[in-house]
Length: 242
Image 1 (cartoon, rainbow, N blue to C red):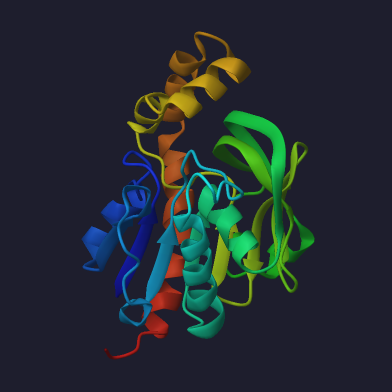
Image 2 (tube, rainbow, N blue to C red):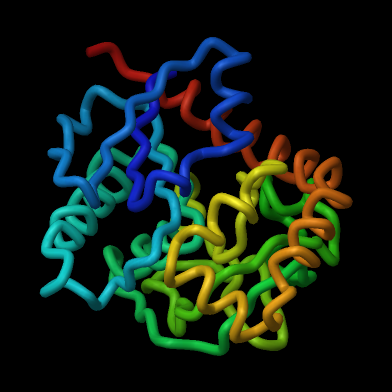
């Protein structure tokens, strides 16, 4: 399987998902859109993975490439109908690209639980995830309305749309499934993330969050494996010759 990864910050990479793909022999190509990389020909890829980043979907003046990214996401999901997985900003971009709405929300930073919706009971991915599901949150914007036809799969008291599915192949998740033991330390070096962490958790919040993430890594990895296997399986079934 061939995967295109859209990144928006060096330290917001596929994390543990990268290891899964490597172990399974899948190939991936990274487009660092924040650095000015061009979007490659989408027909070459069987799956798309869009990561988080410090940008907001409405910052098109500051980051004009966001418009091209949304167009590419829409084409991959709607026209090519190939598997898509969006995390945090990637989740918001999926909604924006397909006619949903993204707004500034309540800042969530920390290890928290999300609850499945009724629709998650029959979803091929979420029915195999724990409910409630402990996850890492680190965001200040959120999807306020899913695109027409979107199905909400997870929620929390502070954020009603924690995950949604569009069609059969596209998933967006506000929370992070890709985390590793280095995630918190790496992300604290991103100025916007460090500021939001200190604002929400206090000056010693990074130390406490790092310890909590490391204590839960085995649970996080099990959830990541479930998400990955469902997403990658759809990609393998949709493969097309170049």
